Length: 390
Image (tube, rainbow, N blue to C red; front, side, top):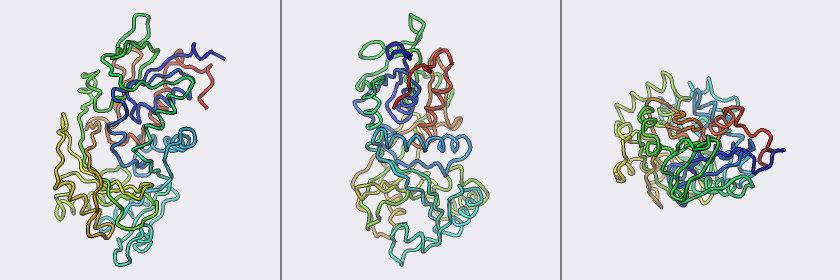
């Protein structure tokens, strides 16, 4: 058995979900791991989202990664105390066009998925009998995590591991070939030598590797979200998607979704204008995370448009049969976006992997992406002789 001090070291730049995913996978593979994060805690995309691990609504490579991520999520509930549960996803249809999308979806949905009637949908959301959607698809295997605590708990687990550490409040200035053949991470607290470096800086990738970000078309997607008090007792149910969600996720693609898009363009153009994804997740404290709008920028302005927020709130209130929703918090999310690649993976310097999820699905696919990256490292650099993390 190789001593811990002799195990190869991986440095990870960024303590968001994608960076920590690589750290967890590297520890499980037997590496020594150092995570470097510029802020004193993760404050960007990984804490500003719904906490929805929506594997069942993805398609293609994203679907594969999402499904591979699910068991890793369950393992982190046990190992790291992550607040996550198998909530399922309820995709609600309130119009004939939306219901047609669900019927099309069910032809290729996961085996345990089922179509609910309007009454069953109302019961699932504990709606007043006077409020009845047309139907819903229940996709039972998806996960809802608490986005406020998840990355902090994973980071704490990494830092407590005998081969792991997390250095918060440490800015990375450069990642370059080291004098002794490895890779050197130049930080505000000194240099760090590693055998391999993973740069998982999200939309900030261009600050270290601007050419990589430019080739990948990486921009900033700004979104508006709110936390509201549930208008009635809802229990702790599934994540809820709506008709606008059907236009954003690959699993819904098809003629029915295009017909729905045309209907919304005619009847509700304001929802397409803000690129809305009207959805919500239910949290342990009885609140709902509601959103969201999307606008892409080279650098996202910090300003929130109250009209956009009100559109989202009105849609969510109508879904839940409420006159209005009591807002507790508002915030802006920012994540990496690209119309060229769904996932950016490049090696800008020997021994360095730059990786960014550019679809806003980091919580959904990130854990498997980290596992794949670590598994693909050259055999000469693997830590196979070191026992995996327990």
